[in-house]
Image (cartoon, rainbow, N blue to C red; front, top):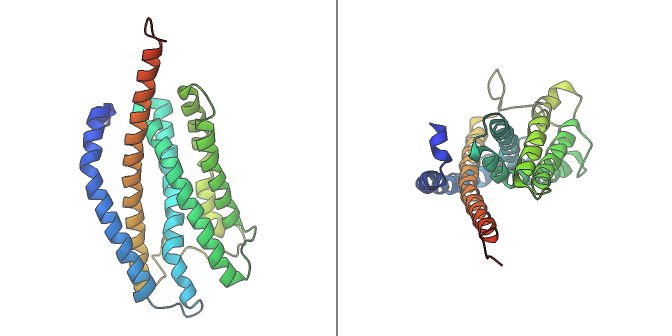
Length: 244
């Protein structure tokens, strides 16, 4: 079933149908999540209103891990099954994941300044997220480093798959090492330990960010497909007899 959407025209029709159903709910949920998180949820008994950074920081961190996982899976599909849209989807996702990781680092730094008294510490969680940020940048740079797009796709795909080892390191770093970063309070086997008044806007923001990601992903894939088509036509024109 997936292979039928390898056809650019068919994929564009599907993307055009899905985009409004992704973009508008994403905008609505993010606005609702921000409202409840900033104005309707209670301050933390220890952190006060500083805790409201959480409603952007935590979903951004989740998205940074989710998008890199998406890229690693897409890269594996592209290398193993040669699906024409797999590498394209990984390429389209990389800048979005980079932005979410950057937001995660910046908001985490702001939060750390108020809680720890410093903008940055070489904590296991913070350091592994910084490595993730550089993996995103490396993926983007490697993809563009070759004149042959196929070589760029293969090289960046290998980096994407190898770099995935950092995702579980980030997730379990607070359990494996002595770290200043607080342990998980939402994604736990025993269930969330955060109060529902804080958990609800946090989850709303997470769903909104996820829909926003898929909206941007479809838009970027459509743009990349147009660029690829234009490049192919340009090459064909150059190789035509009599072309200058």
